[in-house]
Length: 581
Image (cartoon, rainbow, N blue to C red):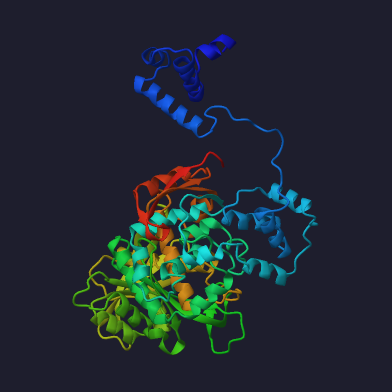
């Protein structure tokens, strides 16, 4: 483009508007002539003149901005400088100061904070001991606690957050009515902290892979995590302990019942439930705890015995009980039936229970059978059973293929028989299973004589997946982190773990190709992402930084449509890709 063409044929919108107004006002051309020359309508020309006159009347410059050379002057006194001074006197580092200022609505870079500290005469922050770091981590952001506790809306604001991906769970929570279940629960609340904000605060930590609750310098000042719970920032560390201490086991059980209805209405519960125990270790000096076998550590140690119920089709955890003791361990399956199958005559949703050999007694298997529920479990080894397996002819063995969630699988061999058990009323069906790679034989027993043997094998094979999910609870959701400085009651922590796990399963269900992925994988690929949040009246726009799998996530979130969130002042939230990675 030459110099003449630059003025003759302007391409930038502001340049075209300027040239059009110059023709119309300064040169005195007709509106119709100016509109034809610059591709506008006549009404647009008059609108441009009206807006131009309005800006001049206010003393504004409509087109040209005077730029001053050099960096912005760093204030040595005043509100911002006073805040930085107070934070550094509390031994806060530059990143911690920036996080606090971001939470307070101040937009300033770490470089500018460093220069400001130098200009104010502060030396480099010395290495802090553990006690000082805990003090800093527990400190609230300056001038934000009042708004934080009151759940103030953040309309008209914008901020950066390292946990923007966490906000992607908001449509899932709202669409499935989980927020309503929380508000209708009997969890405690105060005027300053409603129960919805309280539960969402715990859930924010679970969903975001906070390795240790004590490491709250990572999250306590992040506005994205605060927005997730409808606050400016999450509460301080001490609040989590005090809130947890007020929750009873009955409140957790009633909340789990409400969640069970949500999973069922969403079509996430099949006719089968896998049951298994897990030991949640305790590393303190409490001698009231019983010793339980820990499969990960391969030894028995003081721990809390918990029962988990899982749907094999979707991976949803439908039940959790952290109050199991040795004396009633074998009856835990009956308590699960009371939870999931309260009226056997009317409730026909649950048809199969799958569990390990030492999960319950043969007498309890009779009770399960009388309630019209089929069971599938491993028979305990004995000499007579081994002799029976050895006497099976080769012609009795059949072949079946066990498929995994990712489409892969392997072939196994099985044979069938009938037997009776001491304490069980009636015969049971035996299915002997062996791998093509090993000669060891496992014996599955069931009271279902109707379905083919290979379907029995497939149903029990899926029970092995519950072990993987339990391992995931221990590793990703940190069920065994009872040595954290934030003391959270185990049964409540387990309830929050179950809810967080199921939210990841609902997320995976909406993304093709990732339904079989563990929560840790989903977090790495989709949720662990920074971004920028802008508020425009009743709408919040979350701009997620670009990642390879981000288009799949945004497409899945678009399916939920526009939802309003009461804990965000009734506003809506939309998601889009940012221009940065």
